[in-house]
Image (cartoon, rainbow, N blue to C red; front, side, top):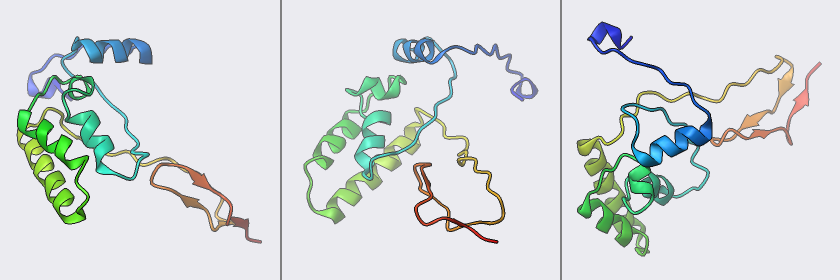
Length: 136
């Protein structure tokens, strides 16, 4: 697909430890990430992807003093409206800078028989069968 754009890509499939090391060192041009937000607070994602002191903004090296200061302030803000406004500003900064490009979201694959009823999958991909039953 990149070839159609005139870009020659050498795909290097590596194990997770090697990928992580390359990410930390910046030894890549393009890489893929998978993410499941398992904490119900925007600080987890913002801290990992945009806050420079945490893994150099997930290895991108993006460093915005304004974003960093806003992130730090958001961690002590207790007014939900003010904190929401802080995260809105951080999202706008991140979108404008585009240190990462979010291309797609892959839902968790599930295969169930048509007679399984009451099954629930949480946004984290956990399979919840406590209320499930088999219909006849």
